[in-house]
Image 1 (cartoon, rainbow, N blue to C red):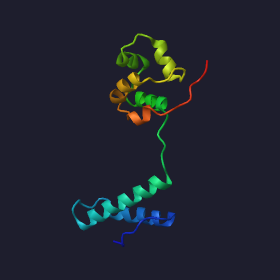
Image 2: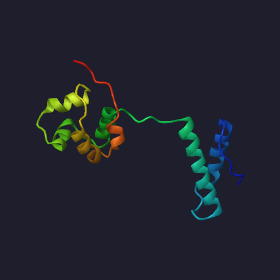
Image 3: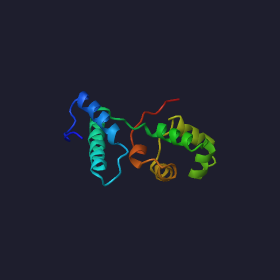
Length: 126
């Protein structure tokens, strides 16, 4: 095991990944397990700073979750208590914005954080 240090360069990042490979399956509570845990934290910090992953816009997040959960527009209609297929279509096609009541319903039901659903996104004009 090497000395633990913050990761500042691509070379240090690659070295940390290589080092982690050797201790990744170490048992928790052992010196090797503790070392692996610290390496993971350092690697995650470097990745968050250098390879940020932006969350999708709210509508894309909804579509992704719908696909993950094998849901259709009619399922959203049921969740929202509406019979208007057009309203759902307008939301999914970005012609109508999400409203706070819709966000409050869909967030928990689809498992999408509110922070994602309240983000601004451009609307399409007909």
